[in-house]
Structures are given as structure tokens and as C-alpha cells.
Length: 254
Ligand SMILES: NC(=O)c1ccc[n+]([C@@H]2O[C@H](COP(=O)([O-])OP(=O)(O)OC[C@H]3O[C@@H](n4cnc5c(N)ncnc54)[C@H](O)[C@@H]3O)[C@@H](O)[C@H]2O)c1
Ligand SMILES: CCCCCCO
Image 1 (cartoon, rainbow, N blue to C red):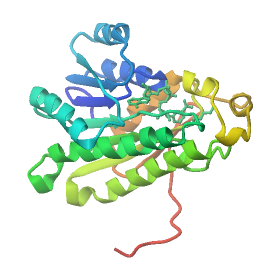
Image 2: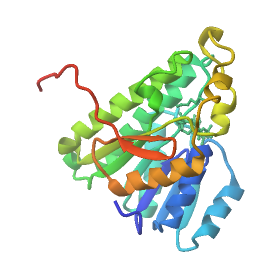
Image 3: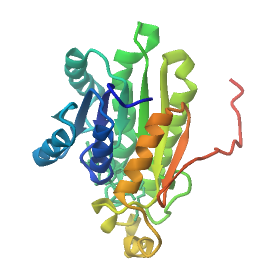
Image 4: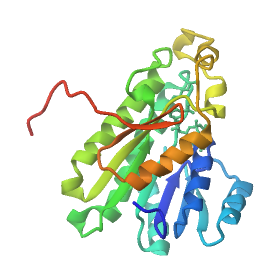
């Protein structure tokens, strides 16, 4: 998908990975970049507008843990204004294995509910135009950081959901792919709690290994958007962008 002249909704577009990705997206000249986020950062919005004045950058406060009905109400405001939306990026995530329910609510249910809400506007069975969803999951969805099993499982769940969305594209007209960053230096990863304190030094130990910058991640994120490959499982690790072949161990047959 060429980003130029498209309308993009970016949930969590102001975070560490999010803001650098928003910067790279704006450089590619979409018509609208609508950022939904729990954090409000007017200076960041102003900076994005200044990067490319031709792009209309708007912000709406949004917490992905609200109901589908609440999400739908916000999306209606956006669709009434934009008329069409080409890409939804779901990027919200927390990393704190003390917060079990909230981790599942933000990282998994938040992605599911926001996706479910936009289907009302896109589903071709209701005369919708279809659309594209990019879900930010994680390499921990492939193989866990087992000291944060709740976080890792929430990302595996989001990855599984995204893979199913892609398989359902012929029915719904909505395609989907996952964005799976490796360890990327943001505030999320500086320090975080392991589950039941099984490893108090988990962040310190992980950060002893090579990481990537948010800019490297963002530049590869844009390449994945441009590739626009339904069902792709993109690994964005150590400054690389690689499509992962998922190993099939069982097939439902349907
Ligand atoms: N940094 C990494 O190493 C890494 C690796 C793989 C995946 N990820 C994922 O990338 C995404 C961004 O992470 P980051 O490292 O930039 O961290 P970050 O903490 O800088 O960004 C997290 C983003 O999620 C938003 N968010 C959190 N809770 C929310 C809620 N309830 N409603 C709406 N928005 C909410 C935050 O406001 C922020 O914009 C997350 O989903 C994270 O799990 C990060
Ligand atoms: C340093 C640990 C970062 C974990 C986030 C991977 O999704």
C-alpha cells in the first residue's frame, strides 16, 4: 500500500515505537494520520504536522480497554469526517507482569475490540469497502520471554488473532498482517516486572543483548505497510525486516 494520500488510524501512535513510526508515515505523505492514544502529547502532534504540512494530523484520546460500543462511537466520528479509512494500526501495549488482567485487556482484548469495532465500517458483507489492519504484536509471540509469561502470551494471542483475520479476508474484505518487533529501546523496556518476581533483573539481563532503535523499527514498519501482504508475519529485529514462515502443526481442515 502506498502511504501517499491514504487515511490511516494509528492506535498508540505516540509511544516509543509509535512516534517514530508516525514520523516516518508522515514523511510518506498520507492524506490523514489520525492518532488515537491514551497519552496526550500536543508537542508531538505539532511536530508531526511540521514534518509535512500537507498531512492532516489529528489526535483523539482513546483507551483500548473501553467497550466495543465506545470504540465504535469514536470510529463513527472519524469516518464521518474522513469518509474512508485505508489502514488501522493497533499498537497499544503494556509490559508489567504484575498487572495480569490489564495486560490481557490492553495487549489482547484491546486489539480484538478495536478491530471488531472497525469491522462495522469495513465488512464487505455489509456493503463496506474492506480495509487493512496492521497489529503490533511481538517476537515474544513467537517464543516467549518466559519470565514475563503473561505479556508474552498476550502477544501470542494477538498474533494468533491477526493470523485468523488474514484467513478471513476473503469473507470480510479486511486484510491483516502482524508487526513483530524485537527488543527495541523504548521506555517500555527499561524496567518492568516479571511474573511473581521470578526474575527481578529481567530487563537488565535482556538489555545486555543487542537491541534496535525505534528509528530502525519505524523505517521497517513503513516498508511492511508498503508491502501490504495479507497474512504476513513480519519480524522487525536488529534493524532487519524479515517475513516469518509460520510452522503448521495442525490444520482444522475447514
Ligand atoms: N519496545 C520493544 O522492545 C517492543 C518489542 C515488541 C513489541 N513491542 C510492542 O510495541 C508497542 C509499542 O511499545 P513501545 O516499546 O513503543 O512502548 P511504549 O510504552 O513507548 O508505547 C506503548 C504505547 O501504547 C499505548 N497504550 C498503553 N496502554 C494503552 C491503552 N490502555 N489504550 C491506548 N493506548 C495505550 C501508550 O500510550 C503508548 O503509546 C507495544 O504494543 C509493545 O508491546 C515493543
Ligand atoms: C527488554 C524486553 C522487551 C520486551 C518487549 C518485547 O515485546
